[in-house]
Figure 1 (cartoon, helix red, strand yellow):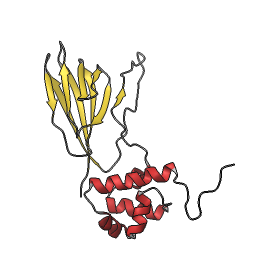
Figure 2 (cartoon, helix red, strand yellow):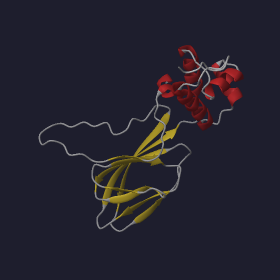
Figure 3 (cartoon, rainbow, N blue to C red):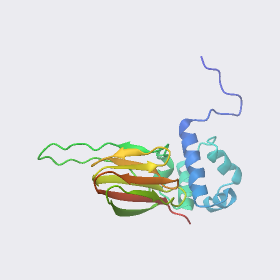
Figure 4 (cartoon, one colour):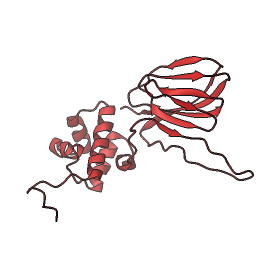
Length: 192
């Protein structure tokens, strides 16, 4: 039998820790102090501190107030979509004559999205310029083959492959013997 936690202290749940981390991340991405965040949400600084450390048990009303203060949907605080590194999805084949739908990546609200088409000639290496803090870059390869992604962990990609990685860190694209056609989606946190 597990002994009870020390008096006055509840064990930190993984959900409370994840929500707290999301609140802190979104607040910091917006350059907002804890005091300002607490004021906008109508909370005490101590309550906000408890929530951000994962030691709180917020009500739906409290989460709603925080989401409004951050100008994001409440679902963004509950989604466990923290990027732990590059996300690679290999291209798949569709059955002939059948419609095929695949969710490649969900991008939460609170982001500004840009969609670009990038065409790179053969035998070319292109350094990616780091984007704003918190930007996630998504590559979907239409045609050709490319080595791309973070400098420390590049990925070989071909038609249909998808790669998502932190776009605020050094990254690059390198083609081989043929041109590559890439759809690029930038998801950058909206700052207030």
